[in-house]
Each structure stands twice: as C-alpha cells, then as structure tokens.
Image 1 (cartoon, rainbow, N blue to C red):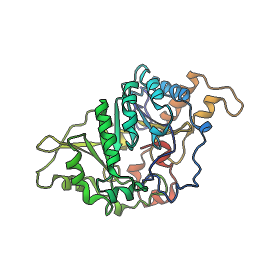
Image 2 (image 1 turned 120 degrees about the vertical axis):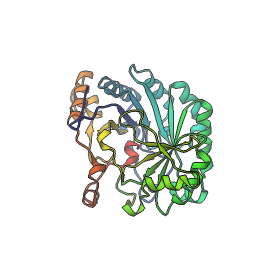
Image 3 (image 1 turned 90 degrees about the horizontal axis):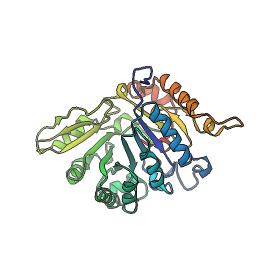
Image 4 (image 1 turned 180 degrees about the vertical axis):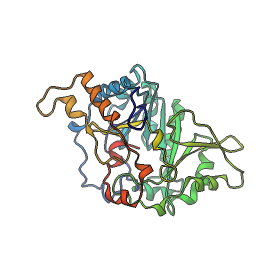
Length: 338
C-alpha cells in the first residue's frame, strides 16, 4: 500500500475541471480580485477529458478509490457528463462525486446521474437572500441553489449540503438553515479557513464547531457523536434525539491532517498534496511530452505520482499559526476545489 511520510494512504482524488465559476463567493473567489478583467485559463491549457481519465486510472492503480470532480464550478465545463461516464467506468472506483454550487443542476442532474455520478455536495451559506447574495458576491438568490438540490434528489443522486460559517456574516442564521434543510440531506458546517490568498481570513471570523453545535441544539437537547465510517472521514458527525444528522468540519480548531488521504489535481494538471499547498507537481507537461520530450508512459506516470505521495509530509492545519499564515502563499481554492 502506498503511504506518505506520515503513514497516510492515498485513497481520494479531487479533480478540478475548470478555474471558472458563476459565483464570486467572498471566501473563495472575491469579486474584487476575480473581476471582469481577471484572466482565466484558456481552454488549451485545461486537461482534456482523455488526460483526466488517464490520470484517474494512474491514481486508481496506486490505491485511490474515490473520485471527486471539482472546480471552480465543474458544471461550467462543457460535456461534463462525458467525463463522468469515463471516470465511472474505471475499474476499482467505488464512488464518483462532485462539489457544486448547484445553480446548473436543474438542467444537468439527470444526465450526470445517468452517466454514473453517485453524489453531489452542494454549497449554500444562508437562506437569507441578502446575506447569501452578499456572500456569493453576485446577489444570487438562495432559491436557485435550493432548486438545484431538489433536482439532484429527484434524479436519485446522493446529496450533502455544505455551509461555510463566518462570525458576523452568516452565523446568526445557522439554526434556521439547519432546521429548513435537515430533512432534505445531511448538512455540514465548515469552519472559515485561510484558503487561497485573498479571502481576508482571521481567527476572529472563525466560529468553532463546538459553538455551531450548541447553536443548532437550541431547546432540542444534546447531540450525540456518531462513529466515523472510515479513516479520513472529514466531517465529525452528530445526531440529535430525532435522528437528524449534522456534520462539522473543524479544520481550524480540530485539524484532521493525520488522517488525510486526499490528493488534488488542478485544471491544468498540477498535483497538490494539500489544500493549503504553496506549490505542486506538474503532470500535464510530462504527459504531453512538453517541452520537446517524449510523453511519459503509463508506468512512468504512476512512478512520478507515487514518488510525490511517498515524499508527502503536509500537515498545514496542524501547524497553522500567525507565522505560517503570514509567510506562506497558497494555491487558490478555485484552482483545486475544496
């Protein structure tokens, strides 16, 4: 079994298919940075579906069992169901999932399900139109995301809902959101993290997960923890007395680096071994034989990936502090997904 320097196996691969998005969420792609003049990647620089499939096969051969398609916003990539079909047919893959803002799911969910997509994780940070519009940067109404969630459920896709929590921004409406959505799908609350370089992160904006859980409980009593289903499960799950489940992703106050089994591929084919990485390893160039060399064989590609993972020591969230945050430039989340 391939493991890194801290004994962590390679089990999950997140594949970004585009750096573009149809929202400008303040914690990911703030509009003042990613505005009308921002230069997004030209199509020729993106990995083709054939290249993505080849990479996925190499990772599966090394132990990956779960594939997640991300962005930017992955539903903006033309002919996405074709890629999902390619990935779902790879022998050894147990799960193909996607992270999305849900806006295009009403017209795409059925095709994605038919192509082999198993699950979607949909992001919605508030049910208050003013708060959500401010957080997504474009004034988009939350009903558009709710329509996407409904479309995914109707198509038979598994659904999870993600909410990024920021103190003084959307934390006042957490219980309202959970009460409204908990019968549709599991809701997971994510501590505001210092991803990328432009979201203005500071510790004062973080609402610790334990505080989130206390707010959700209200007068309904205490939550009970649920045992993890597998090593590396990101969300700590809890249920209340009525059997409603909530997930807490506590990368800031309770880091889980020790069980992280995730690798990430950017839309241009750079391999990152941490969400907070400052640099990665180019896989697209060697696959294409650029500049001016012979393309890597499948065996050589696997050896390159295995060498990167075997040398991995990333544990940024466990090391997070003022010095780390101030000194380290990180890859933008819009390049590698969540």
